[in-house]
Length: 121
Image 1 (tube, rainbow, N blue to C red):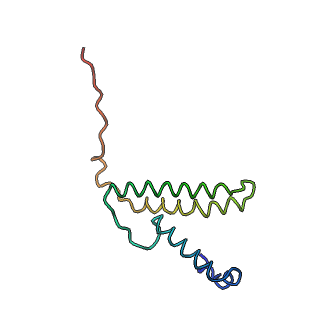
Image 2: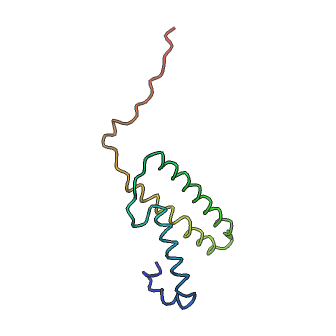
Image 3: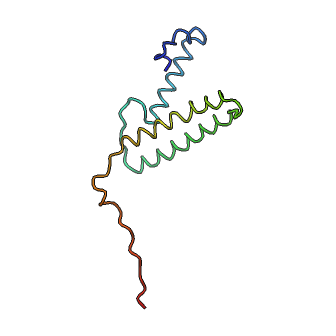
């Protein structure tokens, strides 16, 4: 976003190039962890995937709680910073997952409704 707005030089003048580069690297790593980066994703075996998703979910929750602890709910800019830092990446991830999921080939091949057991006494 900083590059898109042409703000690199202004930001470098305010904080220096090293913090901006570190923030860029951290944001890139977060995008990859959320699955919204540019690197192709490897599909691990299902048990490993399940364990990784559980661990990732716990870490995302921990991160969100840490940021939420600093939100001043009476300050709109504080709330917006939280939404931008936490909710925007999560919403982007969710919307990307919905777009990537293939539609079922045949809706009639889904689960069938259970047949009730009737006592014939």
